[in-house]
Length: 206
Length: 234
Image 1 (cartoon, one colour):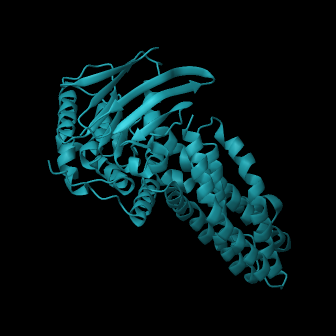
Image 2: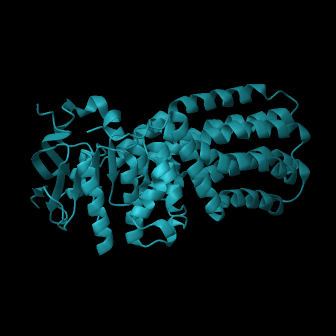
Image 3: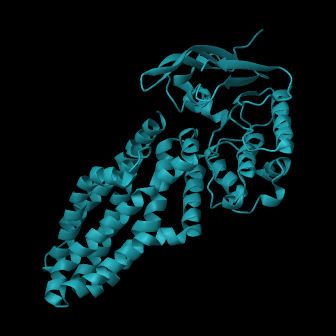
């Protein structure tokens, strides 16, 4: 039996100021899939990812989650989705641990594994320092530390490797590999190639 | 393969509590910023007797209106930052994409805003009443009216802040949007105090304020949530 794909999108189109950004995008993400969105700057990668999270409404096209149209089951979808956007969405006056704590009120999160997740991304010694004092790369790691805690099936990551050093890239690859092995799926945008097996690519024409 | 154990979706109370706690924590860490509207509130009211002269009769006449206007402007100043900070640092996206209902999260933010701005203004108002020679009969209606009125200001400010969240030059538009809605609260709030000072009862205007607060509480979180979704979308 071949179960319905986790996320399927058909004929997605988006317009900005009446100028089409992309049209007719189709694709499907199945359990264990990693889909990389490629495209020049301004091609609409961030827009596409935000359409997939439901934050943006497409001009045309449809989204299906586990084989059923999304509009009817948005909250179920959101409970299984983890989105790490362009801006990390962290409060600068709070420490990484405090930031993960408030996120834990909004999303399903394994709070008891917080220390392990922070350590895994090399944030152990930074866990209780206000985020305002952390570098851009460390902030990105804090945002990504939410992923192994979330238990979400689908990860949507916008430029997860921005500002991250070589060790960090390896840690992110390890995160994705484990998620893949657990049957999760990832959609991400990046200009870098990841050292992961079976990464599929979707290129946006500029 | 056994499905990995999934974390539970936090309940409504946990979601409300987490965001309320976060905003109070942030206000405490940035107390200089949070105290700004309060300092404005106290300073302006302290300057009035110096500017118009210290005759008690004149001040008594001015007192209810002055305190209410300052409370209104103090809350309006702070309404601007209610959602905009979250918009700039990307945290607003988490709120909108949370499986928790957005109106609940709006309500948590409004609660924090009221606790940080409205409640301190209410508690400070008797002191300002003293400075402006407010007669004894006016203090209870002033306190009760401000407690309700600042809650309405916070709730309506949230709608205005949500509508203007993605715009530049926000404060002008926000004031234009929200001020007309603040006017009835100002009128009933001041008339509660003036009626009590004149020897009449203040029950009528206070009951109307209560009704306005109940209506705002029932409508504003949903309106602000819809405005936030629209603000993010596009």
